[in-house]
Amino acid sequence: MDVGDLKKRLPGATFSILAVAALIYFSQNPILQIFLVLIVALLAVVGIWEYVQLLHSKKIEAPFWLLAVLAVCFVFANYLAVLNIGMSLVLGFVIVAFFFSLFLYHFYKIENAIVNLATSFFGTCYVAVPLGLMIRILYPTPSMGSTTDGSMWLTYLIVVTKITDMGAYFGGKLLGRSKLAPHLSPKKTIAGSVSGFFAAVIVSIIFYLFGKMVPDTLFKMSFIQSICLGGLLGVFSQLGDLAESLLKRDANVKDSNKIAGLGGVLDTLDSLLFTTPIVYLYMKTL
Image (tube, rainbow, N blue to C red; front, side):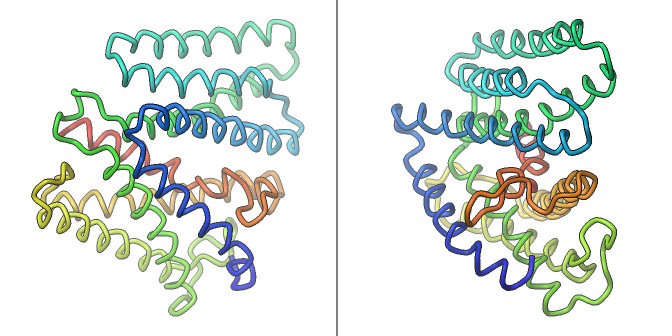
């Protein structure tokens, strides 16, 4: 992203940050919970649509409406599992329904079924699973620790992930010479990648210090854990960015969408799609 592109996207990004901050702050309101789940479901639908468009550029067919419905069901199933552990059966049913429905669909579209099935499975897992896990992070179940503040953990996830992107961008601008992966993203540099990694670790440590200084907070991690988790997010955030660049490069498109000030849902969430499972799995150990 060049400076001109950064200036063009800054207003939209600023509005998005403020909106997300407000939603997270009021996320425990029962009415707002439904609104948040609907937003996540909408992001899943748009993300699936963008992915299907990438497939179309490669002459690969995918049943958008089927994938979108299943992605929405997966997001809501995660929310139902949060409300009632017994409702986890719904999540299992959605996964089984997804598996069989894709095969049933291709019983009548045999040509290129192997490629179409593989890309459909991958796309839904790539987009819908991390978004569903965001719901689990925001509203943790007792199995993830009764003294866990989901709002703080989701804030941690988003801030550390995005600060990695910012650190990589500005570090690359100031220090970058050697290219990181010129065939995927020509403007990314090794210096930028290292800067993004250390930015993630530093911000993770700041969250750790906040947890220690504010006794009432339900956000807890050790100093070593803050370094290790921050480092993991610093790595996987950049892998997520490069992974989406790989998909777009193969599809020969610049942006996954043309949403004013943002580009696309996949462009905005690419890093989070890789870092969300990391934070979720860590919270399962609390």
